[in-house]
Length: 397
Image 1 (spheres, rainbow, N blue to C red):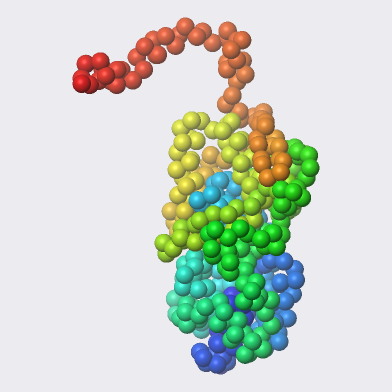
Image 2 (cartoon, helix red, strand yellow; image 1 turned 90 degrees about the vertical axis):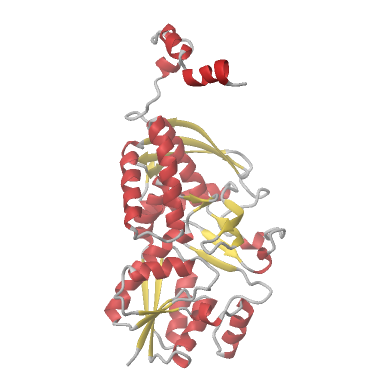
């Protein structure tokens, strides 16, 4: 009996793939896999119910804690950001692929199906993750890419097959949600001049509805990882959820951008990442206090490369491990507290301290201190970039 496994969210793309696997691709059994990296509870229940109704063998894997500890926290240490977007969707895909691969091997599936289109990024991320984690003879099927279907055509096919769906031609938003962020695209949002309607946002309040007075919060870090908010110790998932609430209530975390995808397409994306907009700036502020000038300059290069590779889904590339080794090493000293003020969509770092690792010395830096003999700088200043001085004095015409 032939068997195909499927990444299954319960949404439109993956739901229409189920009857296709049987009717067009000829598989007898369909195994659906939902990896919960922070999906809404009603979507998890909906996916399980739909899979059961359509006669699938279904697995739901709760990976929220692993996602927070090993993926989100690594993104914080790397200041993970691609073109102004704190990486959320992209960093979940490698974990989803890895955990789905375990089920694929357990079930002995001959093939695996995903609902990615031929225009998006996820086809790269999921297929790379699969090729690194499943036997090479497992076939990868991408019906949406092979059929080049439009969103409207998918909706019509779903209606034909009696598949319950929540999107319509009028409200055609494509939403991906996990513990770290939400991405919203499609429909009228594809017009770069169209203002995003309030209805697409879930985690952040509008400027009008945000807290009427400023909110101050202290984030505590240990080795680059946030461990407490206002002195209250929390586990990784709880830290993220609490940060979402604080930032979202203050209208912080909405992103409207033009993004360059892996294929080179320029697309309009909307994101909600309130926790990332709070925790990453706090992490950066602490790095400024404890890392040397050379470490900071080189880490900015490493962070940018890390972010690009994470965006491309290359989590299992050995070079990615190399980057993580440097990031982990520098974060060994990123321990301390950062104070931030949030108000009506704005965020400011207003204080930072590290009792153990700060490279700042108030006595040395103060204009009122005589601890350091300033006259010793005279010779250094006089010879500062002597070659450029010689060029400007004797050579430049």
